[in-house]
Image (tube, rainbow, N blue to C red; front, side, top):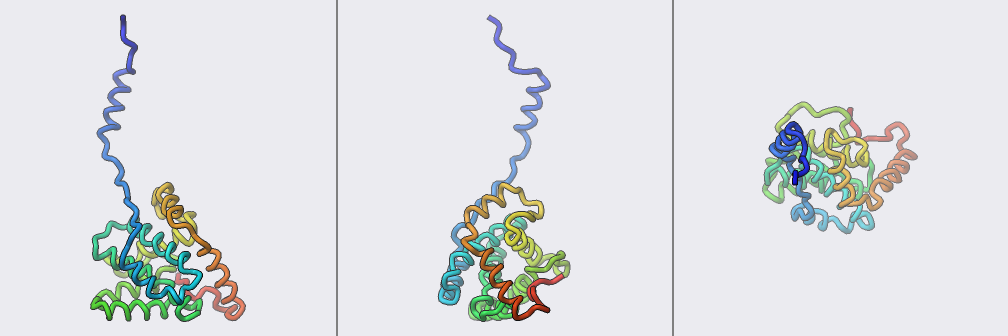
Length: 205
C-alpha cells in the first residue's frame, strides 16, 4: 500500500531550513532583585499606600531595561539602584519636582555603600529618565536604555522601542500598575494647580 506523501521536496527543505534557524533568546524575568527590595523596604514608610504601586513600577523598568540592553551583574545593580531612586523624591520630599531630591537620595546611598564611583552615571540615569529625545553624551552608560525603559512603562506599552509586544505585555502583566499610573495623573493635576507655568518639571527635551 502506497504511503501518503509528506509534502513536496521544496516543503521539506523549507521545514529543515526553519529548524536550523537560531531561536530567539528568551528573556527570563527578574522577579527577585535583593538590592532593589532592600532600598524600597528602607523607604516603605514614606511610600505608604503607594509601596506596591512603586515597587511594581521599578520591577517593570528594570526588566524592560535589561531587555533593551544586555547587562552583567554590575550593570544590573546600577539599573536596580537607579530604578529604586528615580521617582522616590516624590514621596520623600513630597514634591513633583523630584529629580534632584531623587538624585540626592541615590548619591547618599552610593556613598554609604562604597560605590560613589557610580554616582555620575546613576545621576544621569535619574535626571534624564524623562528625556524625550535620545541621550547621546556617553553611550557606554546605561542612561538611554533606562530612559527608554521608563517611557515604555509610562506609556503602558504604547511605545516599545522595538521590544516584542508579547514581552512588554508579559512584563506589564507580571507587575500590574496597582494604581501607579493613576497616581501619577493625580500628582500631576495637584502640581498643575500650584505651578501652571511649569507643569512637567521632570521632562527634558
